[in-house]
Image (cartoon, rainbow, N blue to C red; front, side, top):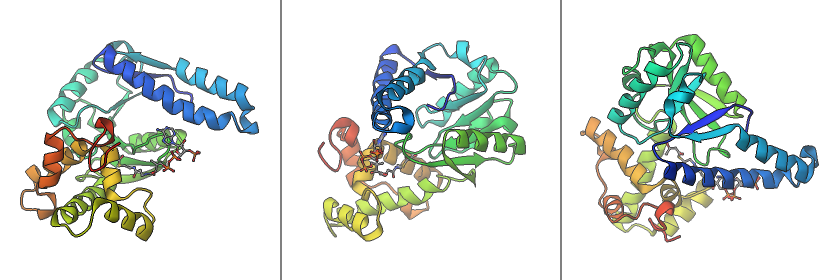
Length: 270
Ligand code: CAA
């Protein structure tokens, strides 16, 4: 959307086809706005926007072919530290020395992922928020090894994408998730105690604090498996912290495949 030639690399053509569908749908929503705005030349501008954005995007399973000439590699794979380290060790062998690496991890230590590479000074975190085309925030995560030139480059890149960047240290959950995940967990515990229904808690937080979505709508939107994965990961690292303890209702929903919007049911049915 912002003019960069981009390659989306994934493990199978099947997954890439699904991604292409989601990207086209999302671009379509933005195109819709262009088509109603004289600034973009109505329909003609909208069509140019859509086709040129799609032309700049390559979907591929061949990581090596694109990494060799990339200026930046952003990883957004499964939230598993060993998988991330393994991937970056491979990417590090192929990428040009100047290439900057970033992880979009929500909760894992950036410095530990970076330790799998020989470019710790050019390895930071770029944490985006869902839905990415709409949410303005980008957390830029720094480590003690990161050079100041790389921090500036990451912020500059974020700004070109139209994001507002906040710089934060490599601590569990960074800023947003460190506050958001305990909040979501506390809402589920409130439901578990029978203090109020999910709908009432959502309405209370939407109308009482102005949040666009209450905690249950938001947890369903993020994916209950993701919420559980993040909280469980922290529970393992900080077993004494009560706020990260497993939550029965959440565990039950996840184990029965009710993961939120993406599976058609979570706390709500869709
Ligand atoms: N692609 C493109 N545009 C999109 C879109 C998408 N996927 N989703 C929504 N939009 C656009 C719509 O076209 C619409 O644009 P206009 O206002 O210009 O018409 C606008 O966004 C608002 O969308 P809707 O009218 O459909 O719905 P809404 O007003 O209820 O907003 C929402 C939807 C933006 C998701 C809003 O409910 C919201 O902000 N929710 C909170 C989201 C949030 O907290 N995200 C963070 C999750 S945590 C995370 O991501 C981090 C992690 O690591 C887990």
